[in-house]
Every structure is written in C-alpha cells, then in structure tokens.
Length: 405
Image 1 (spheres, rainbow, N blue to C red):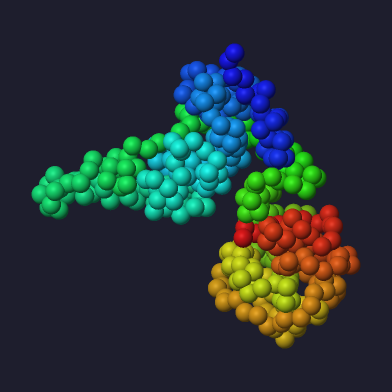
Image 2 (cartoon, rainbow, N blue to C red; image 1 turned 180 degrees about the horizontal axis):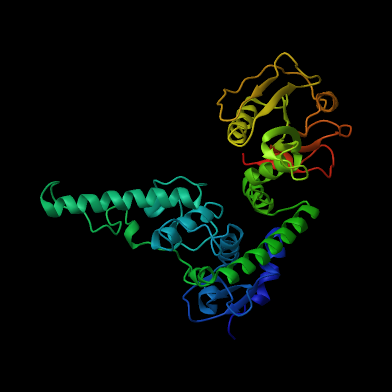
C-alpha cells in the first residue's frame, strides 16, 4: 500500500497544537515528481499545497516525518514561498540559507541530508540566524572564492582554489536544500496570485496562532519564534503616510487679507484673502521609568523623520508635564535625544496641557502602560513599539502606530 501522509499527520502532530492547526489548512498531495517534499502555491486555486514523495516519507522514522512536516510549514510561516527573496532572486544559495534558518529550530529532528548550522559542511555557522544572514554569509564566501579563482587564472594571486561553486568551503559546494523549492517561483511570477496566496496564508497562520494561544500551548515552537510569528501577523503601516494624513487632517486655515489676491466678489475694491494652512502639533514624549533609554532613542529617531514633514512642539511628561523642558522642533532640524524625567505615567496631565495649548493634533510616544486618559479636544494618536502595541494597558478607538523595534 502506498504511503498516505494524510493518514499519519494527526498522530504526528498530536503534541504540536500550532502546526496541527496550520496543517489542517494546507492540502497535502503525494507526488513522485519530486524526490522528497516541498510546498508551493497551487496556480489554479491560489491555495498552498504540500507535495511529498510517498517512498521518501515511508523510509523516515516518525521523528523525521514530523521534522520534515514542520520544515515545510516553517517555509510557509516565514514567507519563503510568497516573498523575502534576495536581490538576485531565487538561487541555490538562497535555498540553502532558508533551510539553515528554519533547521536551526529542528536540531536532531531531520534526515542526515539536511543543511544544519553547526554540523557537517556548516559546522562553522551559528544556529538561530535569519535566512538573510546565512545568505549574505554564503554569498560573501562565494564572491571571495570567485575573486581568488580569477586572480589565480591571471597569475596575480597564485594558484586558484576553486571555481566559485563553494568547493573548499567545508564541502558546501555539494550541498543544497533537501526539499524541493522549485515551486516557490511559480507563485511569485503572478503578482495577483501571490497576493491572494499571501492573504490566505496570513489568515491560516493567524487562525493557527489563535488556536495555539487558546490551548496555551505552542508545542515545540520556541518563545522567540512564536514572537516572530506574531510580529508577522501585526499589520504593517507606513507611519510616514499615517503622519502625513494625521497632520493634513489636523490642519486649520489661517485667513488674512492681501492686496496681492483679487477679491472674488469685489474685484479691485477690497483685498483678497490668503489662506495659510498650518497644523499645530504637540508631540508628548513619555519619559517615565518604564520607558527605557533604548525606546527613547527610538522615539527621537522617528521624530527626526517627522521633522522633515512639519514643525511641532515637543513636551516631555511622566506623571506631570515639564513646561521648562518643552521646545519647538523646527522643520528640518536635527536634535539629540535626552532624558529629562523618570517618574510614573499619567496621560491626563499631557491631555490637559494639549487642551489648554490648543494644539490641532496630539501625538503621544509611550509604552501605553497607564490607565486610559480623559478625552482630548484635538485629534490624538499614539506611537509605541510593536511589542507594546500588541499589549496595550487600555483599549481605545484612537489610532495606535507601532514603530519597528
């Protein structure tokens, strides 16, 4: 009887709630067209499918079968099939790099043929790096090897040591990904298909993450990997576009008379009107003890970018507002970050200050770790890190923008 992976999947994933939930949303089909296994986007349906060679799977131990399943699912979770290609596109080095990245989470669970950091030809490479890190490392080695080879041929650098394939680098030239990655390019050639597949995958991963969270068990998925998965589910917003829109919608019109403009109603009798649209924005920076120096430095980095768009007033606060340390950050200026306060956190004093100052917009840079404040007369927006954006102390309908950590 031909090996049917679908009959074994539930048993193999009994102690893996996250992968079990994801597996139910991924079609698995046997195929002898590939030697081992692989994942791809079905060009007809836009759904993800895992292909596997039944003879290959039949020869694996249960531990290895589970490891290969998780390997393929990790390719999906980390978006190797729908994006994250390096500048040069699909290549053997990228195939190896993606395997090295996800196999770091599967030490001792895979067949011997797999590329594993810290073992065999990759004994000098550390565990736990990203696909991009491994790719850049391998690409640098390959480029150096090619340079040495060219110098050897020209007689400038002694005898050549290889052909650029990676030979001489611990035997890496003979290695490649153990599974089939050829289907990745199919989904990326059609941008519409790729976008549909990405949204469906995101929905599947989100549902799997929610199931694992409700069960309070992610199985073998480590804390760091779990956080990476959750970060990928957090909507990414271009904060510059949001801030431009925020400033635009906070603008008010200052009208003044000018003889340089004709009055539409009484031409040459009364002066015309000039409209100058300006937005008075108050930036309130939480300097409480729970906001560490790294976060403060990050906030100021974002404010430098904001200063390219508009002038604004910076107001430090903790449980109170520091009037004497407030200042106007003029458009185009550069400033160093500084800590001037280090108390608790109360969002009401800065809200009172904004209402009194009459700002058109209020942006609060904070970790959100305080009770919900009173209403603000101006349009209010919150900026924090991705970590705190997922864990707000209070619920609000106001916009919360996550700055990448």
